[in-house]
Image (cartoon, rainbow, N blue to C red; front, side, top):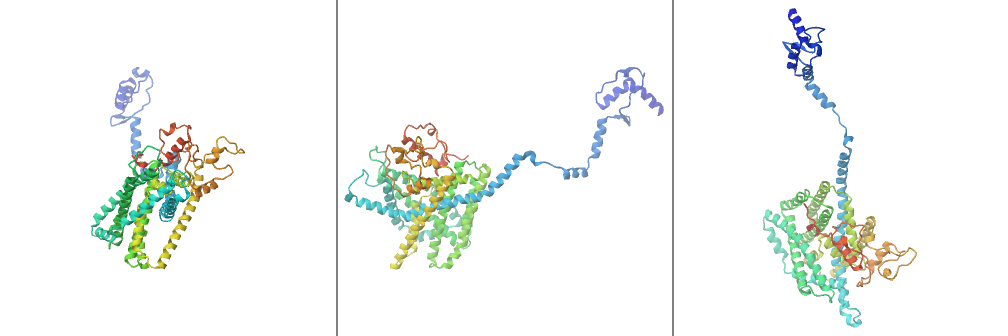
Length: 569
């Protein structure tokens, strides 16, 4: 063995053994220059070790050593002691935290908007029962006493008085038409249907209610404009009488539709196993599936919020009708009211929970902040304040109908029909109670209007939208009084905005003249919750009438039905 080792040593230095070594390890190391000397000189230091006749490289030894070091304990130790640093992606985690905070703020901000919107709907709804009859009486008194005072104006009545008379006549006609609809027969007809049929019927009624609301306000607006359009213009309509019959037919059919909804809800309340009521409440959660996973812009979310406000207020009125009908059947026994109370609370709670969850996930998926609901509230407040101006172009109830799709006439007809059939008035004392109740409704309406107007002015100031209400004098210095044309349309410099608003509430609107600059002007700096038109960008300051038109288009651009123009992907 010693001789073999001595013979192998010269071979390593001669190059033959080095070639074999390169072929075995594959490292491609070059030979040393003195390696071909035939064994002269000192041999190089051995770089490989012999194992059973083969040579092993350093890389293989390291690979074997690393394999030997791998073990289950080392893996567990590495997993238990492995660390990471969240600050390396600070922006991502900050955004996630803000999303959580936004979801936590959504219920509070949404309910503030809902409460404000519900009181707006209540104000428009109470207007039909309280102030509208008085306004109709004053308009008819002016019409009948007009020959005594002479015709001082070209118009027999003001446009607002004409619209009030039309609303009053429509209410009276539809109320008498509703007497031909038997509520008891409708109740037993619906009660005889199966649960699945009633579930399908209720869904169809909800869709039909939205369709009626979308087309009904257009019918009413067409009637009001046809009746008050200046006569010197070219006739481009079919006449007032056809529009009037269309409006009467619409209000009657919509009232019947809401009556069927109330009857179906009453059947669900009176069912023994409450299965229908449970199915109807679970139907609200289908809204989450249909709306959460869609793309929403700010304007589209505004439409959904307005629709939710209208739907919630309508449900409150339907629950009131159901309670009235049930209390009548049980001879106004107050104990039965506590039987209905848990079901009423369950319906309201499910509606509120669905709205909160729906809006929370919509804002999360579309990166919309919770502050947007304060902007929505300011927009609704702006509608209320602008409808109180001297040259307002629409009634407040019509403005609410355009924004939210809430039309109070059909609902008022149904409620009057249910109340008059459920409560019998007999005797002087009963009529005295009715008069006191009517005075109480007027007090509630006035109080609600005052509080809403004050809150609306506050919200408009917080949103910095006052410049849309009043156009400041462009050329007058603070010490100089404005000219005549500015005095006709603008308040004095020393009067505050609240005084201007309070003065405009109590004043009677007059017919605007051609040379008077309107109060409502288009603001190029603040396009609030509107979808700008391409034509509006090119509007110049040539005429005040064009300013007035563009301003009205700006306010009414985002109503409840703009969602048809802004498609949701």
